[in-house]
Image 1 (tube, one colour):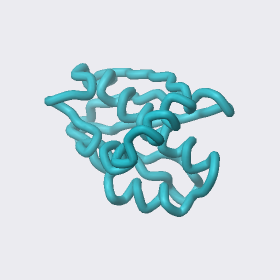
Image 2: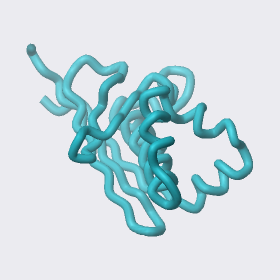
Image 3: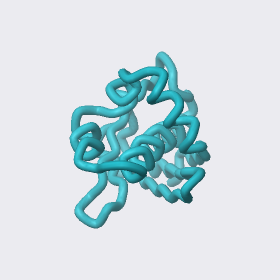
Length: 120
């Protein structure tokens, strides 16, 4: 049974500006496992990854019904790429299945999270 759906669109330039103003931004948004993947990327791909994780976590918080804040923070959600490059949620405050999708252009990143309750 679907428990929540969240989508987000983020301008990559906005994330780049935040990163330039606040160097600690990466550590605020990314978990250690995500940061490890981020550090293996370079140039525009690294920025796309960071913007994608920001947007995925925003989408999760919308699907969960809380938004990012005191109930759910960036470090409470972890989404790493599998060997094929697909985003996989490895940590979240939701007990069921979490489906994630991310896509981007040179300008924007769009994400969707679907929360599925399971009876496992």
